[in-house]
Image (cartoon, rainbow, N blue to C red; front, side, top):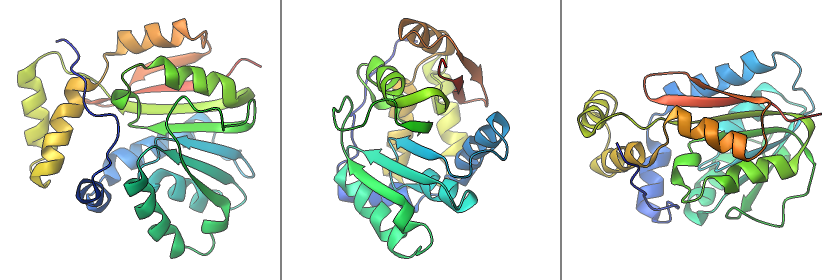
Amino acid sequence: MKRRLEPELMEDAAQALAYAQADFSEPNDLFLKLLAAAQPGTLHGARALDLGCGPADISIQFLTTYPLATCDALDGAAAMLALAQEKLQRLAGVAPRCRLLCERLPTPTLPAAHYDLILSNSLLHHLPEPQVLWQTIRSVGKPGALVVVMDLMRPASAGWVEALVETYGSEMPEVLRHDFRNSLFAAFEPQEVVAQVAEAGLTTLEVEVVSNRHLAVIGRLPA
């Protein structure tokens, strides 16, 4: 099935609020399990970057788990970051260690070879040109930095898309069902992501299918 692009940013305030209020605990937990499995117990004090952070759920959970770590949380949608800021204001132990950045990729403001850990959950399918993600990761990560990227995986047919929307979106508001459907059409197939990573020269990263609708790219940057 051919990829069909969707809007890159969630800039509508009502859409962002619906997204922030939705229960994404299952995929978020999967992401954090992948992170823990990739480098268990050694991320204390890490300097992390969360690309496409949305309302910062992953950033907050990461910083809660690793109380000596810091995280720059980047998203291009101001509405999403406003919701992230609201959450951080209620978390005195986390807020000073999380810096919110309203930026779109590619951006020259991120320091080169700076981060020990690069995270990204559900950004890739939003990008018209996926190399902006992979080249950013290559540029801003320290040699040997850990990379954990998870994203939706494009189904083989429109019928499979609808089946996934009914299975996982039945309790969602209609705006999120619509977005989920569009995101599945906009997502990449595993072999496409393998080709993207190879083109970026990130041959130390591995692509794997981690659920019936998610793929992940995990590994360390070349030392």
